[in-house]
Picture 1 (cartoon, rainbow, N blue to C red):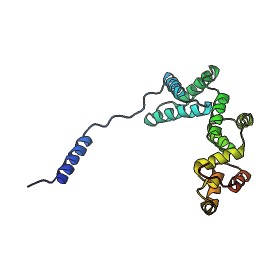
Picture 2: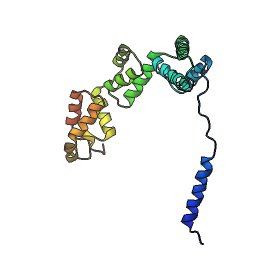
Picture 3: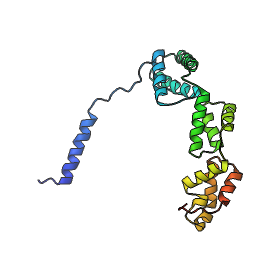
Picture 4: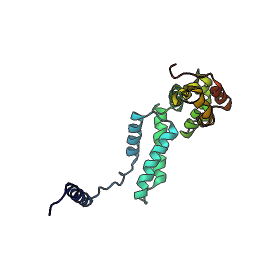
Length: 201
């Protein structure tokens, strides 16, 4: 019997799958959590990312919870206490500084045309104090309308649509995009009423 190329290919794939299925599955149980391991995890995280205190707290707690899932007898409360000690030490050593983190993130967000409301929501999710966010925002030089126009240009909406017909047809859709991005209603209206801007500009 002659075996076609397609049959041969199917047969080869079948045995490859069978061979793979017979391989032992590696144990993915998390490594034991100790205070030193949590500290090492925190240091490695901070080597790659700037972080708020609360954000790093949640990162470490997730590691603890993952380990405790496989080891129910593990004392999570003791590990949570280790986290607080580590965070306190890191703040004292200036490895963690919420004000510095907020300044970096706010400048970055403004440079990418994010609205003030968007910034407040995002940084609030990272556990930053609302007054701290407001104070740093008030120190920045930015124009909400300019931010909105830059955002509209990036999304090619409002005055940056290809022509006036497309602009009118998509007005409500564009309004929704801008509102969801956190721009105030008055700013959204200004953007949508702005003079048509050619793509060539």
